[in-house]
Amino acid sequence: MQVLKPQAGRIAESGQSKADLHELDQVLAQVLEQTGEAIIVKDLNAVVTYWNREATALYGFSAHEAVGQPLRKLHAADLSEVEYARLLERVRAGRLTSSSTERRKKSGEIVRVDLKTSPLLDAHGKLVGEITVARDVTALHRTEESLRGNIRALAATVRQLEAFHHDGKTLSRMTELLQSCTQRAEAYSIVRETSAQLFPHSSGSLFIFRESRDVLEYAASWGRSRAPEAGLAPDDCWALRLGSPHFVPRKGAIRCRHAHEDADSYACMPVQGQGQTLGLLHIAVEVNPRTMRPARPIDRRLHALTDRVGPALANLKLRDALREMALRDSLTGLYNRRYLEDALIRELHRAERGAKPVSVVMIDIDHFKQFNDNFGHDAGDFVLSALARAIAKSIRPSDIACRYGGEELAIVLPDASLECAQERVAQMRVAIRNTNSTHLGQALPPPTASYGIAVYPKDGTRPADLLRSADQALYRAKQAGRDRVCVAGQAAHDAS
Image 1 (tube, rainbow, N blue to C red):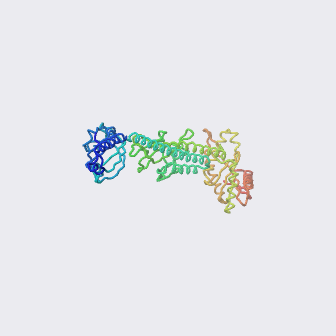
Image 2: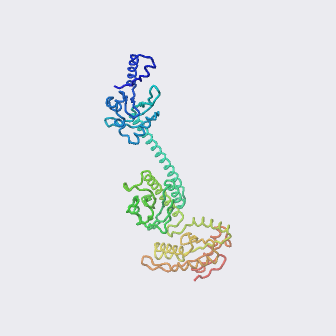
Image 3: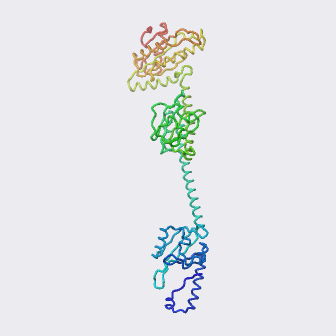
């Protein structure tokens, strides 16, 4: 065992005997051996001059193997030339250092050590080497790394839970708003805003099936998505063909025909509700070419969004259908009398504000009872339905056609003067005369109708008064021989 020997000069200076100094050396050697930490002394060339028992336990080299050897041949063998040159420079500069690093044991095992170095001076204060105190912190380092890993995992879990919470709040808010929508345009705007929140760095579009289900119409978009010039055919999208999500990575070969050429990767998500595909969400997201799916958080958001949008749009569609059923006559498809009364109130208020006329036309199918008596009620329903369609096609989109009761129909013509109403009635008469009068292979008599016209405000300022004036004019037209037009306050005339 090599120990540190006091310099000869120190003997003379202290005045102690050699025996006393020998005893002091033995005490110092015991202290260095029992200190519990590896102590290594090296000269200015990083050659070991002292190596205690703890150094042997730490690095595996015995004192006999280590003393006289440069660190380059011991536990510092893995250091690069640059790193070893830096070590020599530190030793020769006599710098105090403290560091944590890895060293290789004689067995090849890597250990983590905390190192503290201090310069070694002789009796005259001259730098003659360096003292290193090393401590094995491998287990502590592994524990710290494990704790750091656990902390990172916990932080990731917290971030994930925060993302779940944020997504949940966003989706719950969307569902709440969709349930309160009264128009589909409102619903599409809500879906657009929610999608932009869930996918802030992506762009996308929402498409909805027409009632005919032969094409999907553009409904909304966000980000850089552009509205298509035409509708989207169901066969243009693999997701609609398959009835399941379709993911396309960058340079993916199985692309939808509707996808823009500059779209790198995207997801097509069918929007389904009440057992029916209602539309499509097309979103530009990164898709892993190996798994053919987006990252898990994106995938989860995509499914969560479509799982909520589909039922909400289905409910809105059902509410629209029920509202239509409540407002329309089931046989003719025209609005019913209840809707007529509400619509007429609204139109008269608008006419009053704008100082514009409103015309009302009452129509009664001539001899309608004979159709039922001679050909059956099915034939009568056929004639009534056919005439209703013919009338609806001959009026403006802003005009309101209603079934007033039985075989009597009513038309509200906003912003229409008497002359305009008379022109419209002439068009209706042509449409009625051109109506197909063959039912189940049986020729029916050509239908005709009688008409009564009243104009706001001359013939009435309240809905009930205006309807009564038009109805009285209709009654006079029927009394005069039917197939005629009568204007309120004027005599009936033959419209033929």
